[in-house]
Image 1: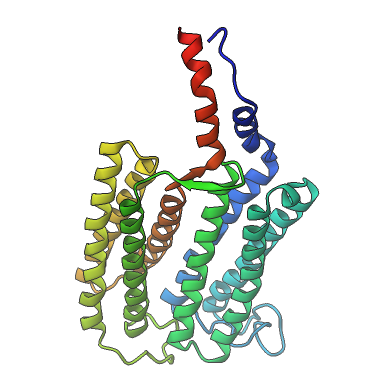
Image 2: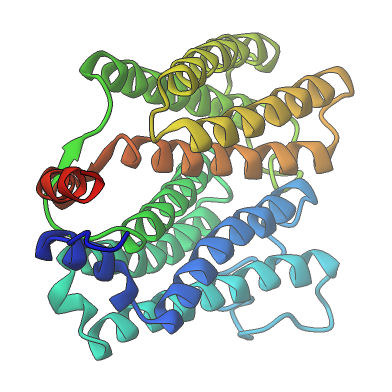
Length: 324
């Protein structure tokens, strides 16, 4: 409006996110997508019985880095997943390089820390993958391998959220009881994922016909896994309802989180009633990671940059005088 002045604080806040180069934004999204894809390829390895398609690590066989003619199509699936690890690692490295070269690493320590966590996590994941092969697909290590990948999806999601907001101090933008309920919902999600991993470790998809199971009752764990899943759905409905009624900044991502969960529940019911078809189990695994990623975004949306509040307060007198 003519005559309206904007405070320096607000101008700084509005321009903060524009200083993130477009190249960094693109590679950050590529990192998120690749982390989700490697869960899909890792699931394909396990669900096709290709977990020991390459019987050694870091080479495919003791004599060869890549699959040989004597090996089967299982080897190609397992080796393809190993190549995907390289792709994920290269993308994470590019993000770190761009953070340094563009100066973002100096200006935004939060983004630098998140980028380094992803890069270090990829290296750690590769080592865990090697241990998985060396232990003959121990179900507990396989489960840890999956959870680690899921956490990297969450970190990539956090990077994207923080990239699109100014750095610096942040302040709570929702009621405290709402924040507490959100964190409790996150805990329920973690419990659901934990029991899901144990259920898979007790089920038929071991990754190789000779690999052992964790010894738990798979049928019982299916029911135990479902209970926190349904509780998570109910809690999310409550969070979305409150956010919609009160116009909280978590509303849109709450709706997205709820949509993913509804699909997840449908896939879970389908796989349980149809003998755990591999494709459905793989989709269920990826959806669990996307649910965790969406939950991460939801949590971060509960806070806003402190400068936004200060800027709004500073602009208030100018807006009043302009309207007068």
